[in-house]
Length: 128
Image (tube, rainbow, N blue to C red; front, side):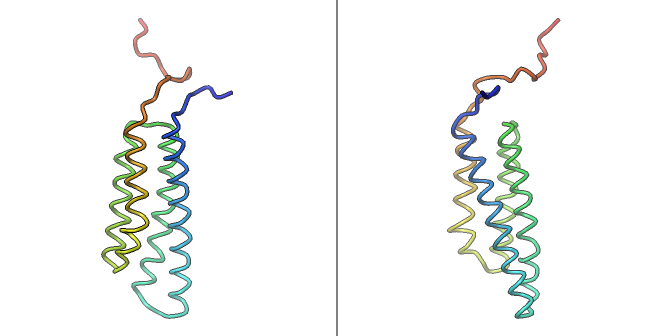
């Protein structure tokens, strides 16, 4: 039994963000390992930044799961940072085809889902 009802959009958005974070970490580590074989400062920078953005995305999935009202702003900020980093270093097709739709779909799912039940542990500010 679950104390808090979570709409299916919140569950889908959380799973999608976990997938995006894991994918960013994996691609970043692969890029970093490739930069060890072929020394290139751009590959090293991208290989360092992408796992960091992946960890931020995994943390944002927890914010989505807890249904915080500012989750869309955090996700939009991380998504813009990932996309601009990829565009800046010339990997714009990965950003356009892969990561931009993931963040856009996640934000739309969060906007359409409204929490239907307030959990018991939430403070009641209307008590006298």
